[in-house]
Image 1 (tube, rainbow, N blue to C red):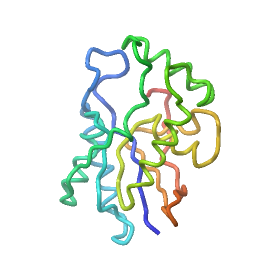
Image 2 (cartoon, rainbow, N blue to C red):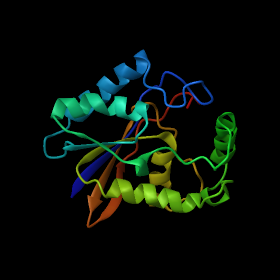
Image 3 (tube, rainbow, N blue to C red):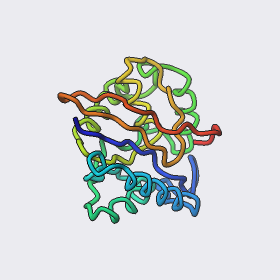
Image 4 (tube, rainbow, N blue to C red):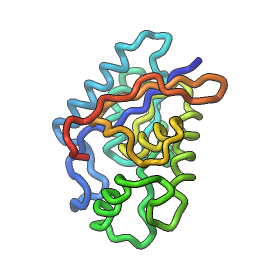
Length: 189
């Protein structure tokens, strides 16, 4: 049995609709990234991650770097654990309202030009293909994995806090949830 840790990025310096569409971490986020690294390093050697995978976005890479540096690992970038794709042609300022509407429904009901139910399965397969890894990803991608494993049709089942860590076991090629990450105490994404 191998473990996989799915970590939400730490607090970014900007939110949806800001001028920077790929923000890094703010001061709080940098501290959260250090705390996540410390938590992962505190795991028993037998289950501590030996690989570090990140979404291509800066907030995930910056969250992953302290842990990668601590274990001497190369950061593996994987777009399959990135943000949910915005429908083609959608203006940047429309993404927030589009996601907020999607959050209230089911994966199969998300408006757009792709099959988002299939996208969530792709994310789950990408995570499952990384045994022994700490995977730094996003709010929606984490929910994609959790709802796929539970067979739940709704889009959101957890509001993971910044830098929260969900733990999975990989047994006979199948991903199984061991522990959900810390829930956010606010509605801020």
